Image (cartoon, rainbow, N blue to C red; front, side, top):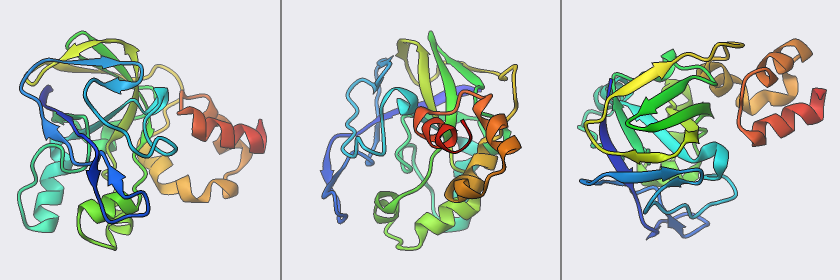
Length: 208
């Protein structure tokens, strides 16, 4: 696999309650630093629901982009879904929580899927897009930065599977809206993987 594009965005107006968003990402031509709190030059407006150490970098892959291009009947450029890194050959269906992506000298650890919100719907100019995105099961992945460094388009990308409990991001994607229905065994299996802290806090409050 390889890195197709590094994408960042500045605050721009959008027709949602927040009024501003950083979802409109644009490719960078130079090497870009990646740190614990994300990609240098990127703006996170809704810090309550996005960003932070466990959602520092959002990654989306070209196989999922190809599916959406067919579904929507138009070409989609890197950054359309607000991802920081667009990776050739990375499919959401193949990824589990805890898997690591080595991009250049940066090591990222998957913490969970992207859960869509009204900002994505507004960006796609489709009031039903939140539902469509969930049902498509091509969420992309949020990551924490284990090793900081710099990345640039063209860098090789290596996937290292998590050696512990295998929890597919699609499993979290399907059940995220029904966390209160999870049984204890499923909850403890999820907790055995390095899920992001917001999900971990909710799970531990129920069965911890």
